[in-house]
Structures are given as structure tokens and as C-alpha cells.
Amino acid sequence: MSYQVIHVQKLKGSAIGGVEIHSEREREGVSHTNPDIDWSRTELNYQLHEPALHARGTYARRIDDRLREAGITRVRKDAVKLCGVVISSDREFFSQLSAEQQREFFQRSYDFMAARYGKENILSAVVHMDETTPHMHLYLVPITPDNRLCCKEIFDKRGLAALHDEFYRDVSKAYGLERGEGADKGKRREHFDTQEFKAYTAAIEEKQEQLVEARQTLSNAREELHGIEAAYNTQKTFVAHCEAISDPSNAYPDWVQEKKHIFGEPTVTMPKEKWEAFHVVSQAHDGVSAAVQMLDAAMSDFKRSTATESIISELKSQVQQLKSENTQLKSKNSQLQEERDQFERFFKRAVRDTDREVTKGRTAVLNDMCYIADRLPAAARKIFHEELNKLRAESARRAQVQPKRSRNDLEI
Image (cartoon, rainbow, N blue to C red; front, side, top):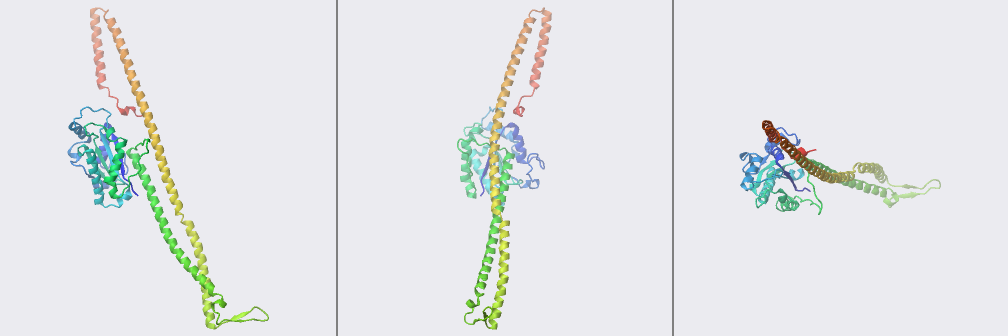
């Protein structure tokens, strides 16, 4: 059973250049963040969005062009300008499709996204065939129908749920994919970043493959056991038949004669040809009995060595453990995000308070100096004001060259 995969990533200014390099493979043969790329297969990647990006400039330039087209002139520095959507499934799903069917799946996915969010807002839709599992990176500018830049409104909790539901209805269902579980009501679901998402997906796929292999081994073992049991039952029937005919008084009542003796045990007589046939059957019975005993031992060994059910149980336990670890990671991620936000608010408040105190102190010093200067002789007062103007000019120059604080300065 395969599931649809739709992963949404929100990107701000500093991250846009990096995703462009990765998506468009601009540095051939070099990737410090993704070891899964097989550069010998990169030529199999293809672009679904027209016009192609290289005819329209970089991601950053294309974003600015689209914002101007939409009449959006005021944008916050920390605004989400680009959203990345990864569309895929697992390797088992794609292994069942031909190259043409895979391209058709991604083309239908692109058409769905263009109709839902506007083709004019899409920058790029690249299908990567050079990684472990085929997938599409689609990047779009989050502009609302009334021409506002607002990722929060487009990809809020309700919007994401509707995206998954409608994508399943219009695309995935036709390919036999499952929609997957939604988030529980009242429960916040955190997103992985791209690398965490790939690592988690790869681990789940590996366990699923092991589970499939174990089930296949169990099926093969059961078929083999069925054949052995059939042969075993045949041998047992033959042994029972031999035992039934081993009693001469029952097997040959018409031609067996019993003789009693005064001394010793009674004896029987039978024709020579009957005795020879009986002797052959008796020998066959002994041989088959030994074979049945060996078969019993072999079946016991086979059942002990074919403990596939326990393997499947262990694999299911490992998959459940991965899910549990995933839940713990999400909880830890939420806690770290909250701590980061608290630190960021504290840092900004501290910087603001410090700037306010410095300004007050500077103003007080200048007032005192001006008060003193007013009581100096004219010549001395002139020299004082000239030096004061030089200090102000130097302070203004330093303020202009001083680098602005960015969000990255808050990284810890």
C-alpha cells in the first residue's frame, strides 16, 4: 500500500538562493547537503513549468517581478516570499509505473497545483529523477486571489488539509494511492525540514521493504511446507496400508493354514509365491517407516528454522518504534521553537532598551556640553562646535557602514 506525499516548505529571503541551487542543479557534481544525488542520472531531470526559469532570471528576480505584476510594493523583511511543495510517493509505487506513466503522474500533479494556486505564481516545477525516489519540487509565490502576499492564509491548517483531500480526489485516487491520516483535532502537527523528511521516509521505506520480503519468505515457506505435508501424508497412508496387510490371518484368510504343536508356538503355512510377495511388502514397510521418521525430523527442523512470523512481528515493532521516535522529535522540535521564539523576543527587547538608554545618555551629555559651551569665550565656543560637528559626522558615517542585524544573528 502506497501513500501520496505532499510536503510544504516556507522560505524567506536568505534561503531562496540555496533551494534554487539544489532544485536547478546549478553546481554540477557538488552537493554538501544531499548525498542521495546520483549525478550520472541528473540529465534525466526535467522541467514542467513553462516558460523555463532560465529564460526569466533567478528565483529572487522572478519573485520581485511577480510582486510588481500583482501591485505588491510593501513587503516585510521577514515575509515568506516563496513556498516549496514536494510531491512524491514511495519507491514501490514508482517501480510499478513506466517512464511515461511517471511523467503523466507529475504532469497531472503540476496541472492540479497550477489550477489551484495560479500558474502565474509558479516559478519552477522540476522533477528529480537522480535521487532515491522520483519527486517534484514545485516553487510558487504565495499570493492570494486579492493580490496579497500571505503564505499563512494560503497554507494554514485548513488549507493544507483541503490540499491533501483535493489532490487525492483529483490525482492520487486514479493511481491507487492512499490519502493518509490527517492531524488529530486540536493537535498541532509540526513539519520536518527537507533532510529530516527524507531520512524519515527512507527509514519507513526500508522497514516496509523488509516487511514485504519477510511476508514473501513466509509465503514461500508455506508453499514448500504444503508440498512436504502432501508427501508426508502419502507416505503415512502407505505405511498404514502395509501394517494392515502385515497380519496374514486378515490379509490372506483363504490360503493361510494354522498348525498347532504340543510343544512350542503355533505356526502357519502359505504358498511360496504368497510368502515372497508378503516378504517384499514387509521390507518396503520397514524402509518407508524409516523414511517417515526422517521426514518427521526434517519437518520439525524446518518449522524451527522458518520463524518468519516472529520476524514480521519484530519489523512491525521497529516501524512502530520509528513512529514513536517521530512523535518525540516533533514534540522536541515544538519545544525548541518555543524556546527560540522566547529568546528572540528577549533579545529584541534587550537591544531596544539598550538603544533607548544609549540615546538618553548621548542626549544628556550633549546638553551638558552645550550648556558649558555657551559659557565659553566666542573663539573657544567656535572651536568647540567645530570639533562637535566632526564627532557627529564620524558617528553618522559609522552608523551607515555598520551591518544590519538579521535573523541569522539570533542563531544559537
